[in-house]
Image (cartoon, rainbow, N blue to C red; front, side, top):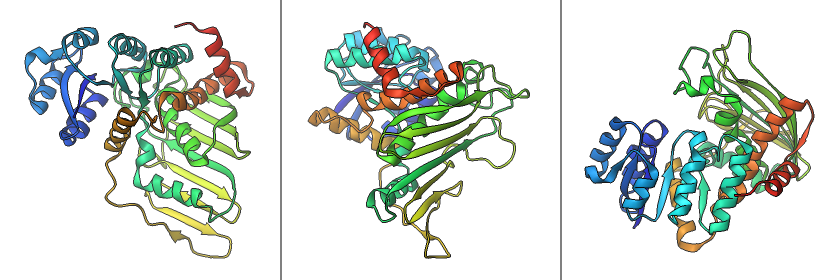
Length: 349
């Protein structure tokens, strides 16, 4: 039984407290909660039978007072670095919500901190474990359609009314689409291709009518390290056909056919010799997405074998985000690995 302190019990943290960890009591014991608001603390305490002495408004205080094996960080992105620093100081393994952090510099510092301390850290990329995306990926990995030429991804949601994208901070931050949204989709493109992004180019912008202070729309193209390519359309101001969360559009164009999933979450294979598509059977009985991430993380703790989205891997996904931001700034294509290497060489922990 592993003991966990959840840092950030409201908002997205509520999903972990009340849905995921509440269903995993035989594997994980929640021994403490941290939040700056009293309501999610009280709700979480009721869900897990915690005493007032196990509720905190400060992560350092919780880590000082409680014995735990790992912490689950579900705070806003700009607070991740201070949470990770506190966890490292107390020798705690870390399971953190995406993104790694809200800046390239903070993301690299986090990676270097946990690696220097020799501590496991995994970043949540739960979309990898949706049944339809598992089915989509398996078609590609089976090789039945031959070599991959390119991937297409579309995320489009109507978030233009004020506060419609959850917390207001997403409407106030720079690069809301990329940092809060596209990190999932860029990671999925890497996951589907089985390759990393070598170079990215594109544009982000704010429509004149948008209720956002930072870029909330974007179009990007990518060259992958295996020679395939990808394109991405992201929009937080869609008025019309949506591909919002858990309803994104993906298409893979391959040597002898294509794989497509749309808002209906039905995976279809189109072959050059068939007029009608084939519906792909999806896995049944698989763990819920968040539970799948936690189970992989527990395996990481038990075996020392890093999870697929451990920090050393996930830095490549968040690197795509900051490379896209640099594209917006410079108007030039950015080589992701070179950018990450330069950042790591120039940043001290």
